[in-house]
Image (cartoon, rainbow, N blue to C red; front, side):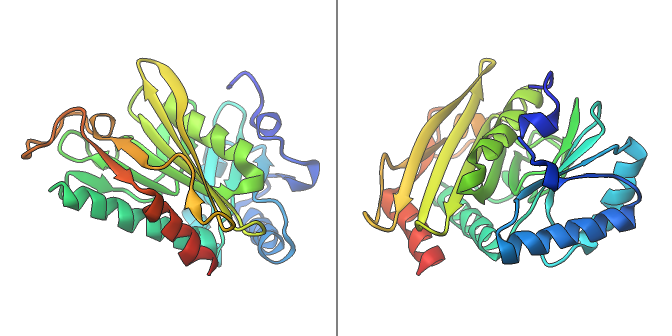
Length: 265
């Protein structure tokens, strides 16, 4: 994928592209585009070009001041390009719900939070880019906090599904085998529909393993449960009663249906 410029790869419209000048001006531009996204249905992804490594570090120091919700950033070093993904209150709510249900399922198996630690939206340095997830987790017994997570989550709008899938592939293909599982969640507020895709990287092969839709009309999740293989989340399986390399945690149709009810009701 790196042979194609990120702006072309992500199909960023010309109206959603800008050139880096300085951090303050770029932050003002980003905030105006966020407002456009939230209030007028503008683009969820925008691009900033002519971003040197020094410029990126300058922007990175100040971007937490962006309101109302800090966006997620991907910085492509060779192409000197930033891609920025916006979030709204629904995305933030979904991120919290996913985190809580994931921890609950782990706890039911006796897996403590310190064993598969949440590192939230921490930016990671991959060989060719800096990239930021919406949620991420790493096996803390075998990795330090500044290392790549084994599991990442991306949340976004249904009409950006192609871009969300690209984000997922970047994590799985460019992390040198360290990130092995990725969950994509796409939201359509108009049709009150959710899409869950579980992607995996194993033996140098990246593929979507599950594609599950939850909709308001049927009020059910097709092809549930959503299953996370613990053997790929950990570098070494914790020694716990009944826990094996083949063990997994699952979100049932009822679990997934609750997301739809809590988000749209």
